[in-house]
Image (tube, rainbow, N blue to C red; front, side, top):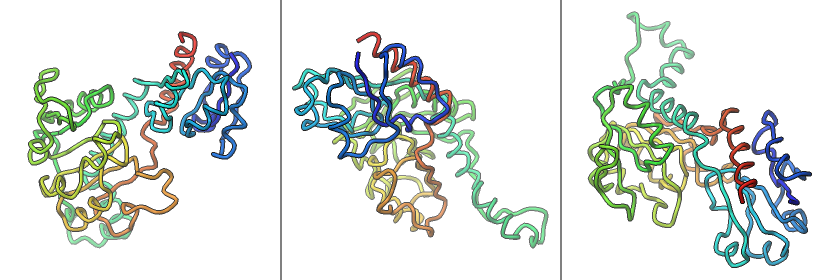
Length: 310
């Protein structure tokens, strides 16, 4: 096997790549690869390992030796899969590696928003507690999670992990049927159409992939259907939500708050509606929910097994 890793830096310097190296032999590693460098760097290799580097038809046509693409992530939107099939190239990805860390991050966002953690921290640092006429501050409403309803759209490995943790806080669970998905019962939880789900939930958490059907699945219309104090959490894909509509809804008080770990463009070099500094009760983290060292090392192990079993 003659293999090249085009963006090894995306897994971090603290992971051990030796499981992949044992399978591939002499693995050529590039920390990062610019689009104009891709063709030269994959020419002559039969196996290409990538995280976010985009590979398309022109690359496959120029590199006939290529037989396997191993994506060290779950999403495959950076690979032209039809073109890969046309050229007989096997594309493999990594699943079920981030349940603990993504679920942990999701719950951290829910808890921070429900308790208004960031707002109270800012108040303390601004000296407002020291100026309070009584022993505490109660300026920001706190949501108690016990007895509240969590709606989960995308009940795969990550969604299940979030459900497990939310149940420990006494939350009621309802699943949302994403576009094209049948309603019914799953693991004893009701799964209902999104339009029925939205008015019921106190927290909506998204855990589905970005497809043509799920793009802007939550827009201005859907946000209007939610409770005024509801929270929207997205640790999946930025394009699932119309970000301008969400920014407008938060400013208008249409919903209570939002926590996002993903944006449509990453990194957001051209700005983003959710990065404005006048949006209340919004937390945005830099696509870091997946990035515990344990999860990243799991990715290496799963990729090695994928390559060994091809």
